[in-house]
Length: 576
Image 1 (tube, one colour):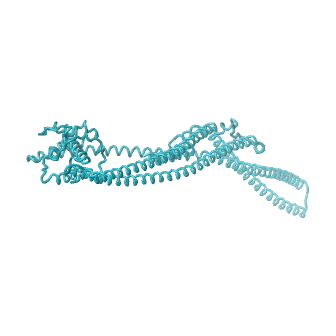
Image 2: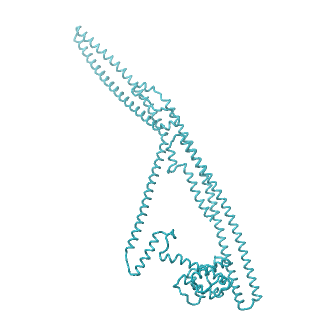
């Protein structure tokens, strides 16, 4: 409860308005006595004030009975009605004082306002007759609930205890609960759908990252395949040399066998045509046995050579299958990277064309130097583009780090200025409270003195010279206190205004830096998009950057927005 009324009670215009409001209400509510505006404002009486007070209290609460002395009842009733200002008993003893009557007139005006609120709002709401249109912010269900409770209570008082209205209300609120649960379920489904879309975008981003790594992996695979082809060519050459040697040895062995067969025929004819002795026959038998053994050795050597030739043919077929498999893998990899190769300026055809039915010499004579150089050029161009993009990303990250450091410094400065502003605000409030307390004390002293002077003037013919001197002294003290409070208040207001101007300049500077940084990030984003589109990454990268998935080009702008939002909130808090 305040000792000082926040309303301009000492203003003559406000006092005239209060008197007019009281007279209008008394005339409209059928007050038994005639009360004029001028008489109530300038020449009040204690009995008249108490009669008007008792009439207004009867309008607010007809059941309230005012008993006892009015000097005691009025402060107690106003305290029960939560009147914001303390009504002193001393004021009721000298009602016609120049400082007392405006405050009591404000009490009557407050009661008039309370009567209007009771008749316009409290009573209709209690009787459930308040219109839904007039109170648009109230819920329709609350209105029906109040009306139903009123009707049920009326029926209960007359002895009719029915539960139909309770069932109807339960049904209404159950329907509302079901509707709210359906809305919550729909929001949950929408949330799950958005999470699934986010997971899809994340998977697409991972797939794009894997596709960006594919050229380097394919280059490594091509190097490995080239090494395998070279080693296979060397081994095929060795196998062909061994096959030629085996063929030559086989032909030499065949010639030896033919010569031996012809020599056997010649010897057989010689034996048939000539007469041989026993020694010659034994010698011939021995030679024949020796030739049989030689023939057997030669046959075993021939079988061994044929087995080696078959094994070499099998190895050659396996090598041909491996070469065909490697060629197919290279062609499939080239087809999968066809768009990237065309965008990098590669030849129209990088696929390998090898006829595996040709001889080993023809296969070994094939030259892949042109295709190797073209693939190397494509890989080099993709490596340069990746390096340029990586350099751009590093520059953006460095700029973002610099701006974040600047924002940290600016935020620290904003907090310091905000703390300084709050400190000055607290000092101003404390000084205002102290000044208000001093002013209230001076006003109470002056009012008590004026009331005493007025009481003395009523009892005597004229105030003494000493009383007049004390009154003049108190008036001078009051004016000095008021002037000092006004000067200190103006100084504090100027200091606060200067602090607010400095804070506003600092805020504008921070916002200007943030706008410039946002423009730089947007231009860099557009440049990266155009570069990616020109390099042939196609709509997939553009879609990944423009979608809901997080991307490197989108992170700086999000950081700027995240920093700008607390700055604006701090600005609003400082403005208040």
